[in-house]
Image 1 (cartoon, helix red, strand yellow):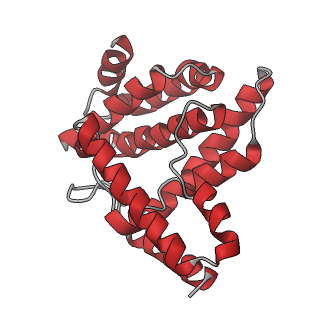
Image 2 (tube, helix red, strand yellow):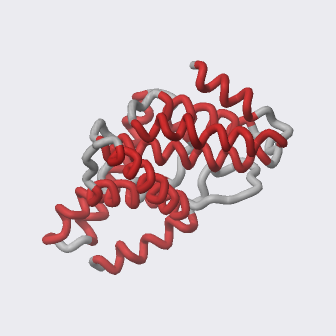
Length: 209
C-alpha cells in the first residue's frame, strides 16, 4: 500500500507497447515514450526561454514525466481511434481520469493526495507548459513513425501517425515549433531520402494543410 504501490506500478508502463497490433521494426513502451517526451520538452522550453518566454520548469517536468501514467489502466489506444471524435476522446479521458483518481484515493497517503492529483492530471492545456507537452508528445510520434517509414514499413498507420503529428505541431504557435519546422524537420527529411517510402512528399503534404 501507499507510495510503494505507486512506485511498483511504474513497472507496468515498461510492459505497455505503443501502437499495438501493427508490425514494427522497433517496439516502444509507454515508459520509454514518457522519458523521450521529457527530453524533447527540456530543449523546447530552452528555446522558448531564449525568446523571453517564462517557463515553470517544475510544472513542465511534472506534466511531461507523468502525462501517460493513466495508460496503466486503459492501455495505449491508437491515436486515430482516440481522436476519432471529440465525444470518444472525452469519454476515454473521463475513464482514465476516474481510474487515476480511484488509484490515488485507494493507495496514496491523504497528505500527499493533492500533490499526486496535480502531477498525474491531464497536462495538455493552453499554458506554455501544456503546449510544450503537446509539441513534445507529437514529436515523439513523428520520430517513432519516421523510424518505421525510413526502414520501409508499409503499415499505413505510420504514415497517418507521421502526417497527423506534423499537422498538429504546425498549428501550435510557439517559438520552438518554428525551430522544429525550420531546423529539425529538414534533417529528418534528408535522412529519410533513401527510404522506399516518399517521406519528403508526405511531409510537404502535411505542412501544406
